[in-house]
Length: 384
View (spheres, rainbow, N blue to C red):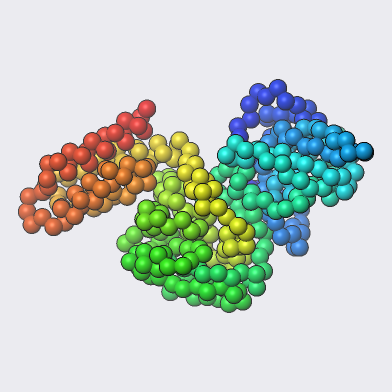
């Protein structure tokens, strides 16, 4: 079952929806309804994904007779690009004009106009009300989450609808062949890059989207994404692969990617992620805001790892291990960029280059001291 998404933490609000439920009772109701949904057959004609969405207090205005408008608060069940599913305590007439005020992740709450298209009794007092919006929305503006658990808002995409310029950065020939096979019927102009240097050069050309394999050999796809973002790339970027747990997943969360396509690749997964950005307008500022939302636990994990690397660097300096020091400095460079310590990253990169080039002896004391201070600061931040 898909993980519940929440627009904001449920607090002890004084608001009240028509069902009179909130907190754990409301979440339990959603879980039970979604369990029944998981066991039901999926409508093969459905285009938009219904994303479970936790928001118990959604203000709705309904058009009444003689232009009067009636206002009520309903609990949300799910959200899609085309509409919203709400829970109500009684029947509602189909075709009723409605305006929904749904809070976005940036704090705004613009009116979303639409009409009631579906009314289903779910047992007891619970009725599910389906409202279709007059204009499609981007669920990413309302549903928080990181790249490792985002659900594509398209449930299916016809390949004939896709067009644009797309770059694939892949290391394996097998992945290249899969991509070509899955995109045969599209109108996309896509090309491949196999190295970091090629990817950097191609990213400076006219592109609509970039997809990067997570495992590229000497460098990870997540590190390449961060490098391209640092170079100024603002196009949508998706990673191809399955990140591990722990620190590897934390790196993927903060690298600057906008989506994740699981492997082995399927045509539906690839088309839906491409459609997410190529079939609808996207705003660079909104995407950047979404990328910058990182939970504290992820940042703490990355800072703790940076602190460990500082300890490892101290040991290598003490032992005169120039080769190990070069590798550790490169990792410190990567982790420092991920947590926004750009100055430390610069020093670590210079330290790695110096260690690699030095014929004997080790490093400049100033570089070592700056990198050590940065790692110590990260260690303190993780422990705070």
